Image (cartoon, rainbow, N blue to C red; front, side, top):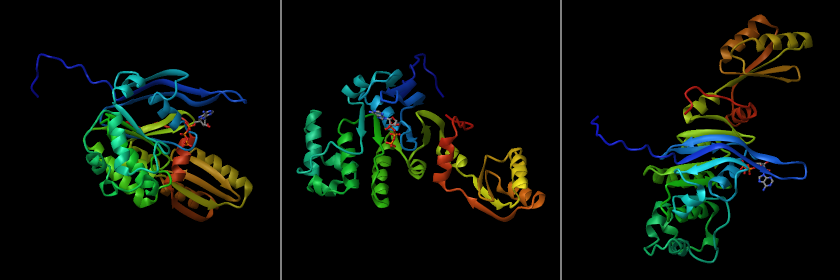
Length: 320
Ligand SMILES: Nc1ncnc2c1ncn2[C@@H]1O[C@H](COP(=O)(O)OP(=O)(O)OP(=O)(O)O)[C@@H](O)[C@H]1O
């Protein structure tokens, strides 16, 4: 690599969250929606903010968009505060609902948005990028939920934002609608845009993000590449029946001593063991105990996700 005598200061992160907290008052005392999030997202990353209901995803996105003020901590967007980044048109959002007039056409909607940004050109390029050029003359109220989301995406593109935030953008869409929506987002992100999206769906995060940030109860519980998250979620369950209560209790203690055992549940006379190495657990149960009726199952991704988010502070090797 050739070197020059000038040093370029490194570009600020697209998004930097430091000690971010958000509390809402309630009659039962403050609700801590976001509980100390530290996160840095580099320009060009496509990141899924993945978590169950109430994890704090929307509260975090609202603070990034300057729609609410942190109780503590800081949000920096391309090195500036959110209001400044939004005023400069560097950030745009696709939210789940709202913001559309049903009685005008798709093209008119994008044209109006463009006028707000002082752009006078044709809306067609934005419609094309969002994959809805063929719907230009359709009334917004006649569009499906998925088509309306792609319209919101076209509107978000008008300011050519460097950072695009999407809050559970595919909720309620069918599989085909989701696929088309994400195809449009991915094609656009390939040009270098930073994309951060909140989702409940592990599969969606896996298919469309480069990096997954798992949040639960207002905290980041895991952060890594989608491959790392898939690894975490690739465990199995081994279940077997042990009729004798005393033996079942003793075997539970022994299993806890095995390094490959992640968790043990009791369902009646069955032991259910979560493990990344089902062979070791199955061999132990069949050769060292009276266990019978043994079953090995691959874990459902959603189950694994729930298990991960229920376990605070999971860490991944090589997490970025
Ligand atoms: N305005 C508010 N007043 C009181 N509590 C709130 C408010 N907004 C959010 N919360 C609470 O904060 C927590 C986090 O909510 P948030 O909407 O950020 O989660 P989420 O991960 O986006 O959930 P979902 O996937 O269901 O949209 C929840 O317990 C929620 O009830």
